[in-house]
Length: 344
Image (cartoon, rainbow, N blue to C red; front, side, top):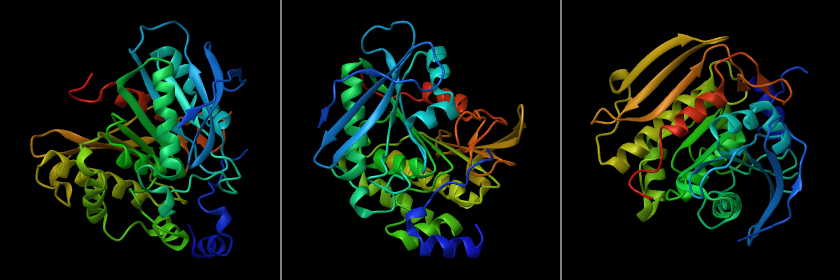
């Protein structure tokens, strides 16, 4: 992001975290089918309300049937200017859900809550347990999981851009709910607490990712646990600096090391196992952050030619790049491999 663009955002804060596009409590039981992305299953339109307000959602129920309590539930938070339908099209989540048999829940941020439909990740009122947007997202997650028989050990949370920033907040606020987390083009946990610090973090990262990592562990309270995290970020991201992906991975490595009671990861490459490759599209580098017991606690995927867009997405959605690797495939793989430990 250029200095001029940053100043423009400061002068017009309603554009906060709007993504530059590529070219081109109680649940509402009403079930109106919605025409969104392709898939052989069915889309359900619903809403959840609590003291923090009301948010609508789209729920995809895949083809076939599964015994009660056996299906994985994947919650996906869209980015700024998007909605659930747009995000579903861009990620091809319905096709993935049909193939893998998981439920897909897409909460929706309305323009009434933010002029650009951004999740309010940079506001303190939306950074705590039992308050604001984290309570709405987790409330509808619990409601849908109960009603549709999701496996409580396989409830996972992902987000892109502002949705990724909010996903981190929700996972820390409710560590008992989400088995694992995926962050695409996002930022570290609680990277900002107002508009100026949000713009600063987007452009230049946070001052101390290690300190945020320790603070996130403390914020989990008595429910603190290691949460496996997949970070995906484009090396040419001009909206959320690539440093944010690196720092998000570092922050979660520190958080998880604290939860595991292991030494903190080294600041350099000594605590990382790295692989590189090229799929049908862009080059990528995968880094596995290790604990002292050689356990991978954070998986970081850097896509070298990718900007601020969903990797391997469909042009039917906004802010996507059709070049691989396919972020949705990577996220589903990661979630499938990281159920909640020691609980049924």
